[in-house]
Length: 257
Image 1 (cartoon, one colour):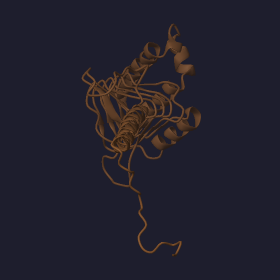
Image 2 (cartoon, one colour):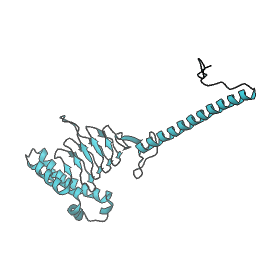
Image 3 (cartoon, helix red, strand yellow):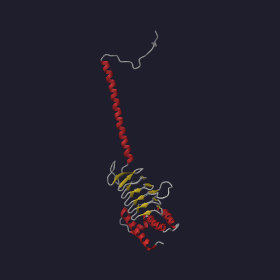
Image 4 (cartoon, one colour):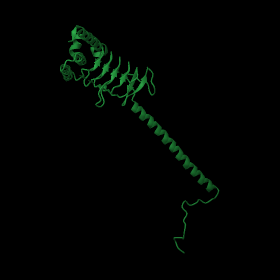
């Protein structure tokens, strides 16, 4: 069965999870641990998962999935009993969070509401993301497939990530792509967690600027051609040469005679 060693490990993990909530949630500053245990749904879901995962590893039938289902109905957070979660994990608010069966989460990771660590297709084996230590994932972000999110990375709110994320990078967009790697931005505007850039809006601005330049060049060329034609006509008039008909008549005079 579980044994004292495993029970002590779970207690240590729970203590660190509560400390993570007090550190990373401004609403929990100065709140006693017992109040966090009683009123924080993210902590409730994680507490239930710690127990369900231990039972799952001990090959106890039925009960781990039942615990997971009850926790989902109470907290709105769904964590598969087989998912591996490290210490110091914190889910802020948490409603709508889904963590799949083969997902792996490192230490000191933070998730906000609506995050999905999901799979793609019906493949067997590893099919959910691996999230390394000190990663922060913003509200509504979707991480799909057996990808790896590198140490210390940030995923912007609403991003859809389907490829590996380099360590210490910031990812935004759909599909998500890095706007900063190893503390340096690879291209485009600077990025921070509060004011993340909008790559789609930036692309539209660039296209609009290019269209404006092309329209200006086209108008300048058109005006130049008109000026040259007008200048040629004025020169012919100055030399006393009659203007030529654009479409000279050919054939008999329609007036007869």
